[in-house]
Image 1 (cartoon, rainbow, N blue to C red):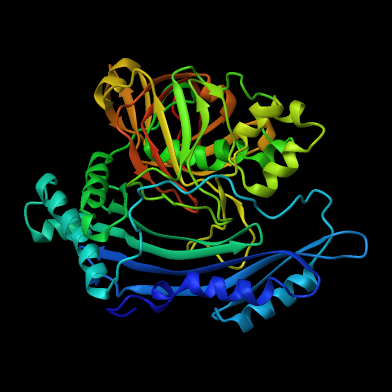
Image 2 (cartoon, rainbow, N blue to C red):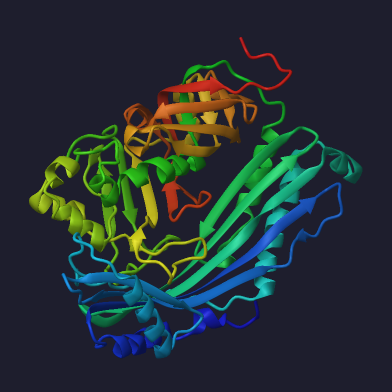
Length: 519
């Protein structure tokens, strides 16, 4: 990475898309064609501080850049149209488009459910600021990393009984994680939308884990945004405070508990269980626990869940999809009622034409068309929007809110006795997505709630939650007021979610060698 804007980001993706489209649109046998150009860069500064072992504090920054183009094309075939996709990496010239088209032609197959490439659906939202990625250099990224490390140290020294530098070494403070900046620019143009659509984005995130080795306690913190200079040390301070609060954790007996889920668990449950079940493809395949329930209650009446790619200032915002269609707000659950799905053009068209539409979705006609608006056709990947894959379905900014929300202390006070779960992992469906059953393990930042307060830390990796997501959504008894932007591992979206309290959550104990279970 250099001090200038990375070449992949600064390149003229719109001009490349236009030139490629003009080259391939009239090739023999081509009925329809779509050109998608993406250029992106991922910049990373990894945190690596240990108080008792020589360390660099912040490692040298790493960058990965990519650019290329992808072509979807519909070709004449002996028995009807054939649909194919091809891509070319590292080259945005018209000659690269020719090679990508040849790959698409070689890979083309008949798809009886294909209707057409995307057709116009309104205009992109007006008034959106130009999100062109700003130049980024090594020094700026390193400074952001050091803000995290120094913030963690200040928080630790202010709160921990270390006494002197030698005592600090004996306790063993470890700060890990990273500061990441993901930048991309895209352009898309097609037969039915011959005006080039462009978009760009910058997503800034910090993920910090603090460990106090002498106490065996850990804590985590997260932050998201769109500008690196606005990133504070909040995530690091939060991680250290949680690590200090987690010393001497307790085990709890298995049973049903009222659980307050923190923002990270809420985001993890949404990303792994709820959002995949609220896609048009899941309804088409009858692979969702919400099958046939459009217009019916699927959660407590206080809950509203939406995906809003056009929300100004949020980290996951986009002006257009990777199909060139305008983004916008898609209400998924409104006041507990299922009202919409995440979809792209292809999945919307084939589900609307499915003879089983009413049974699968729960409605047909205008209600189904409104619920299946294709606002989420993105080509998502770990390095940003990808040029080497056709559009899938991905969320952007997931926003969950609840009526009668209260502050954190009041939410815990109302629970009275139960658990606060601050971090989970290994969250996945069991018995298939349609069953709604899931499992996850509580790994840190968690506490036992007694008499309406956080009474003691919960020992990490000692309890597992096995529940059903449909039943969980129906047992929510309270919402926190504050929404926390959270990115969970491997997720496409940024989740803006509160703490939520759920009654009757089944919690099972995880045994440990040489340790007697609680009674």
